[in-house]
Length: 143
Image (tube, rainbow, N blue to C red; front, side, top):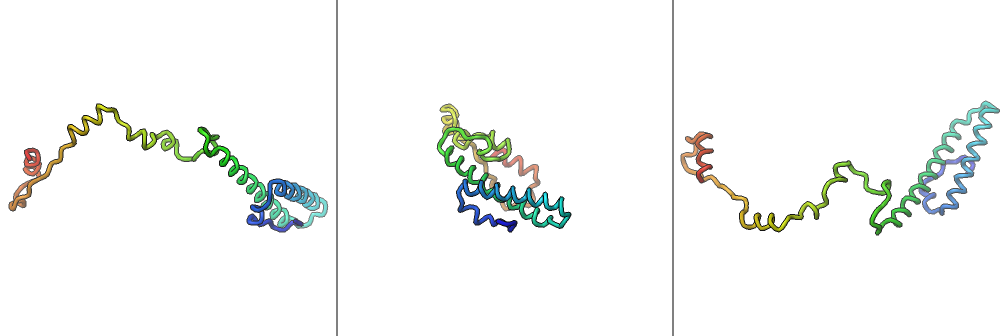
């Protein structure tokens, strides 16, 4: 690599062995640069910075590939590890599923069909302007 920036796009095509080998090379180069910085007191900060970021990119790609493989492994299993599950709020995770929420007892279903919610409507008259809100409320109670 010789302390040039690593492009993440190029890393995705490599295998895990290649990535670990490149990671080892980057780490040894970083160690050499740190020693040179101490000995010669030269300005090696930019190269060190680039190497550290390159190491982080390689590690990120390795971890992402590993997680995707684990997701494939646990895809049709009953349980998945906690860190592979969907991260939502605790309340959303505890909430009932739509199927469970829609479930009802037989008695509740019968009650809903036989005694549905009543709908009320207000009859509009021509002299609606003269009726106050209280009278309108009383009218709706009798309709």
